[in-house]
Image 1 (cartoon, rainbow, N blue to C red):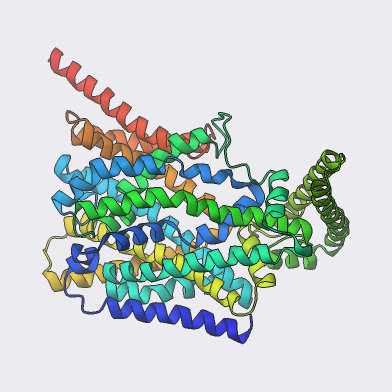
Image 2 (cartoon, rainbow, N blue to C red):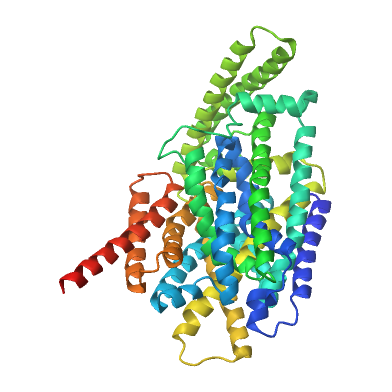
Length: 563
């Protein structure tokens, strides 16, 4: 990067940290540190909810996801608006009425302490792991740009945001998320504009869309039902509904955002607006990835977007790399020429257009096959090699195409997106481990000052834990997929517990506790045996808790009749 890019990057990050420390100063109680005194207006609740969900993974990995697999990933969010309605009707009024610090406090009142502790532990484990992945995502950037060791960059990335998160708590997080998200949206929109402007040979937006469409990258809707298909309209509407219901309704990182609202109406406004704007926002981010495919079909694409990994292959297997490069150069020339021919024949109405499209798709398959062979060679050459270069596609475009200053701002955006989600996660992890574990099993009840001190120590501890998890994230492939798979393994049983609590009043704590454990075992078994795609795991987890609970209830009733 140029000196100007470094100035833009450092200034933006320092400004956010200083702002976070400033707005979060003067913390004197846990209610302020963990819940921001429950005084947040609807627009800060909305931006907090969106910033918590839209981590750096969203902006770094999603364009690469669309580049490799098309835009069908957007179907993952189709169940979101329906889930927002259910949460607004059922969840928010209960949490606001009880004035809880964590969602799991309600479970103790409805069931017992052990159910509250179990559910909180499931959340702590899943959210702690996914937060580590969220730290790793921007670390890729710093590691790639500076050629620094990835383990060092994990420490730097996770450590900087701890400054204002540790000091300012929920209030600092809410206000910095507002600033972060506004910067992010503006910068990503400008990056999309620059992508179209940098298309070669005067090719415009419509031409780029046409190429992306003919390559299969605009496959937004997939209607064919397939249990093992990760992204289709059925898994999105049904599996996505249950995942969103669990994430926004029972995950403390999100519950912690809307329980800071000043009243029930404000919390509902933030959630409902999130349900309305999330799908268009995600669509736009994925569209950048589809347009990137059109861009690199006209301009030479690298043989592998993770340049460091490919360089290692060249050093360890030079002859094999040379063979790959010769084949790649020939394919790129053919692919670029075919792309240009398609656009010319489209504009002229040539009868040869369909022939050219078929040739284009045939070459596309050859390019994809070569990429798979290169990827397999890189993976086999080193145990520590990443499994995919999906997370580097957008980064490569930023580094090699955007103007001076914009590169630094885009890098800052990815850090800010990461900080928004990670800071909220650390705050929620601290609230749960303190309120649902530490204070429950503590013999002595701390005073307000001691409790605030413990909250900060828990925040620091989860920051260190998440950084440690980030050290192992290199083996997880597409990061946006890894986070969602991880959530789907745990969210179903957690949601099942809450649904039983809300809607099945005859089921007691002992039954739901056993059912939750059996449900988690079931979900892990279904995942390990690859029975269904990961989105359906949410449905499996919910159904298993409800089913096992009712089986236990029937067994108890039968036992009572015979006694």
